[in-house]
Image (cartoon, rainbow, N blue to C red):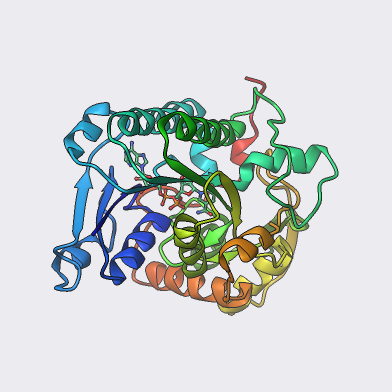
Length: 345
Ligand SMILES: NC(=O)c1ccc[n+]([C@@H]2O[C@H](COP(=O)([O-])OP(=O)(O)OC[C@H]3O[C@@H](n4cnc5c(N)ncnc54)[C@H](O)[C@@H]3O)[C@@H](O)[C@H]2O)c1
C-alpha cells in the first residue's frame, strides 16, 4: 500500500484531501498538523478508514517533529503554512519564519528519507504584483512572471514564502531524485474554510452587524471561486498524473466575478434588502484575478464542475448555521480594511 504524508492535513484543503485519499482503499495516510482536523476523529473511528489513518499533532517548524514521524513515504502533499490576509498584515515576520521553516524542514526530511513524489501548495499571490503592475493576460496562465511589488509591505511576505517553496522543491527534486509538482491554488472555498477570508467575513457581517448601508469592499475587484471538492480532485489529479512531474498547475475555476456581484449574492442568501455602498479594500489587494486552468485540463483532465453560485451557496450555508448556533470564530474573523492602513515600515 502507498504511504502518503499530508503536511497540513488538519487544515481546510488538507483534511479534505486526507478524506478523499482514504476513500479509496489503496493507501495509508498520515495527516500531520499543529492542530487536529475536524474530520480526524471520524476517520480514526470509521471501520473503513481507521486502520489506514495516522493522525499526528506536532509543530513541524521543529525538525524533531519530522524525526518523530520515523518512517518513509511514497508521496508527500506539502500544504502546511500560515495562511490569511489578516495574519500576513499583522505578523509578517511570523509568516516568513513559519512558512520558510516548514519548507526547509521538509527538504531536510526528504534528503534523509527518499520519496517518490512531492506536491507543494503554492498560491496565486505569487503573481498578484505582476497582475497590478503589468498588463497581464486574464485568465492567467502558469507561465506568468512572478513579482513582489514592494518589499516593505507586509502583504508580500506570504507570496515570497510560496515562491521560495516553489524554487526550493523544484531544485531539491532534481538533486535528490524525486518528482515534484506545484499547484497554485486560486480562491478555494467551502464549508469550514476558516475565518480569515472574504466569504466568511461577508457572512459574518451580514449575520452579526446588520450594517446598512452594507459596505462593499473593493466592489470592482474580481476573483474566481473554486469549490473545495473540485480543488481536491485537481490536487490528487496533479499528484497522480504521469505528466505532472516538474510542472506548475493552476487549480481553481475560470469564472471571473466582481466583489459587488459576490457581496450582493451573499446578501440575497441572508435576505438582506438594505442599501449597499462601495468602499476601499485591503491594502495591496489585487484588482483582478482569474486563472487559466487549461493546462491542468489538458494534462490530467481537471474539470471543475461546481459553478460559483453553488460553491458560494454551500459555503455560506455552513457559516450561516455556524453563526446561528451562537458560535464565534476562535481565530480570524472580520476586521475592516480601515484597520490595516500600514505605515511605511
Ligand atoms: N485556500 C486557498 O484558497 C489557498 C489559496 C492559495 C494557496 N493555498 C495554500 O494551500 C495550503 C492549504 O491552505 P488552506 O486553505 O487549507 O489553509 P489552512 O490554514 O486551513 O491549512 C494550513 C494548515 O497548516 C497548518 N500549519 C501551520 N503551521 C504549522 C506548523 N508549524 N506545523 C504543522 N502544521 C502547521 C495549519 O494548522 C493548517 O491546518 C496552504 O499552503 C496555503 O498557503 C490555499
